[in-house]
Length: 294
Image: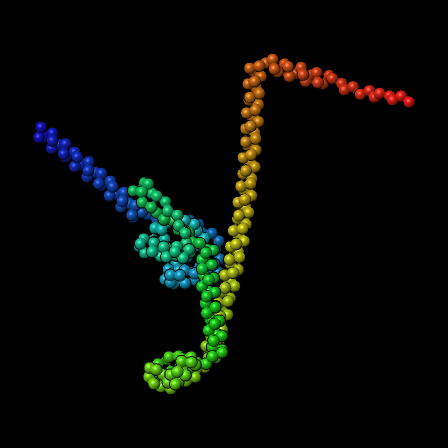
């Protein structure tokens, strides 16, 4: 009896260990899942890639602009593939992608892997249009701020301290009696010509960049409109085909029903034929008109 009990306990322990081993393997595989291959890249111009890199750099910094070359022109790229190509951990990669997602620059689709423990894997796509709109907004804000500063420099005078490198507008300098509040040295009038020249050239550059972005946005809009037209035409064509198929099916069904009725009631067929023959044999007689008496 004791031997049977020991054998029963041993089997139970063996089964539990086996199940734990299987579960651990599945979990380990799902966490260290091998990344898939990156799909083929669609035609993306160098101008677009440069603009997308600027959009990413203005959002989360210039260190991760390499993600643009991985995602541009592709859809639903595996997050493990991105991490491998960038030589980052999966958590670091996800943090970057989540920041970009918060700004609307990327979108994702998640899929459940039922074979490896049911863990979710995320697939990412770079939103080119939204990235351009984000960069457009950033450049617009910079242009507006620079225009205001230029106008201010052209109209007002500024003073500065050579020792402390502090700048004062005319009102603040007057309150301080044209003496530096930090070191006590006399303030000097600042020459705004250098700043105005530099700011003007920078403003011109920003405006050119904005014009390029607007051009690329128009191209994307045109492409999306053309794609929408193609989609609508395809749907209409498919609907026509479906209607034609349904019409044929209805005609077939009607023909089948007719045959069944003729088989069940052969007399009706004879009657129909007779009525048709009679209708053919009847000739229309012209109506006689009565003559009126004088």
